Image 1 (cartoon, one colour):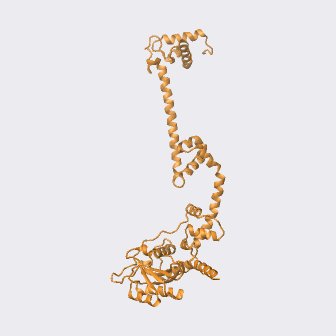
Image 2 (spheres, one colour):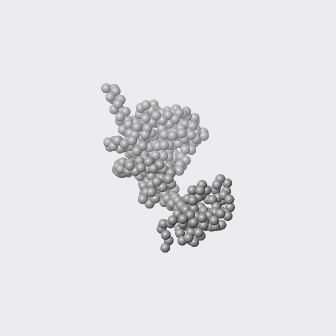
Image 3 (cartoon, one colour):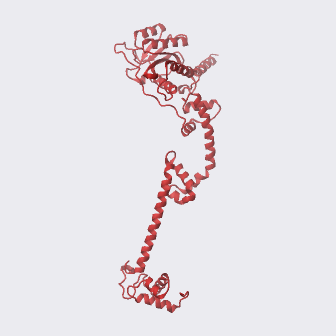
Length: 415
């Protein structure tokens, strides 16, 4: 059995044996003496320190110390083994570290599919803190630990906001459905305000994005404006100003296509009042002859009780430059106005109106179906547009309500 306590003499003899044996190793001498390798090494280093000799000094008969008092790496086999073992341990630690980082990053990938990247990192740290530890996760995710703990402290407040957002989303869905899926965040916000719910548009937009409440994309346009190069020149009296100080002064009109099944079309001509964007006249037919736009203008005259002195603006479509339409305008006392040929911006308000109509009535469908269904759908939208649909140009009031308030204010001032 090996001794637990060794005399000073034994220690000195052991050191002397190691130092005087050429090519000796701690392992070999220690085995001969029946002691632990590290015990012998400690005795040798302590003796060298007492004698003022460098820790890597060579035993008798060995090579001279390297410059600076350090032995050459290979001159002390035991020291070399120790260095290699330390290096192996260091590499194993580094490998474990890298393996852990790879595991963390692999698990984190699904957290960054979308949304706020910083919040996703905090969420990942929170979900995996027990497996990897907060410090390691924050290092790999490149986030500050104090920021993570601050985010974590706000969990209750976030949960409360999320519940509020859920309630608001249900209210938005109900209004979105009642609008036929047409309203975006500005009009939804106005509806909420009318219902006594005070919320700003930015939050409404954020909640709509978060809960997937979206509008419908526009379809490909079909050309409905075919100009007549032989027509007489009509001046542009609007100059892209689609506003008016009161109803009945300025009107604008255009034609749009209504796609049916089997690749057929109906065509819609409209007349809008620039003051409120109210649709005061329209006509639907299976042709684009001058009668189409003439019937829409006649309806506008009946709606307004006459159009004498008004200005009507359109593009250079052959229907609007026809002799029949010009004669009708003269009969009704209407002055014609036309934008430049090929410039849709000169009639942008009507273009926008028709785009909204088809987006909100088709709602992603390719066509309206048969003719009867198309007429019913468009008719319902046009009437509802005047009575209920909120318009951004009217401060999110419907055209009828906007005109009603104008007339009320006018009577108040007159009184």
